[in-house]
Length: 278
Image 1 (cartoon, rainbow, N blue to C red):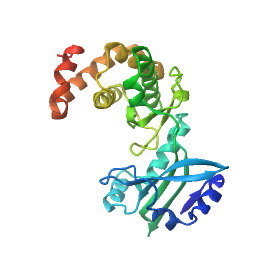
Image 2: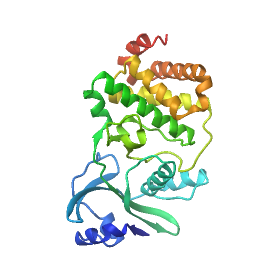
Image 3: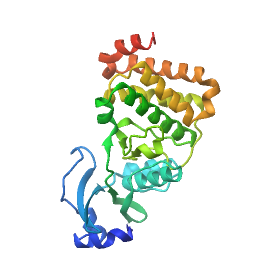
């Protein structure tokens, strides 16, 4: 199976990309993934007289255990890159900006996926993490409020997928509207369909997300954390009336994560003291 967007067929053909094998065997460009991870490379194309950059994600060999995992979840088996395509389309259906998929393909033997690829258009903008680190307190609060609104909207739509700061590219400085300011990348995990997201599950997931985010953006100030929560409840009004209970559940989960996981040892005391989680 092979699909290529019409507007990219000529540009890809000029670079020798016209068959499934020409994509899956590609070893050019710059490798931007770690060796321990799936191969991700850059491709530069001349489209409409302008040079544009793309990323190709390659799954040259699909582990059979991934097929079994899909079957156990009553899902039709696909290669990992095609599952990401499903996630991208699902996010688009919920009006959440994501990277644009321009071509994809999958090879199956007797119905089982053995390899696949996904070609994505580069998102022009600034990485959320880097912009956050070098911004002043006012902009940081605006970014956190927009980030919170995005996560709240994701939960409201029943999307069981983590949205980390490192997954966000900022394409505008109008952080009051996340749909204009942010574009999500790397949608490799999650369910490509809505699921029930009760308050306890959302609060626990939020706690895990915030705890892990500290490793990327550093320890947020109280005003920044408050801005995130304000944004979250604006994006997901379902829990607004029980916001105190919601925050208590999240705080308890953060404390639990800090106490159990050794990687948080260095920041544990600072966080527990700063947010009075003892």
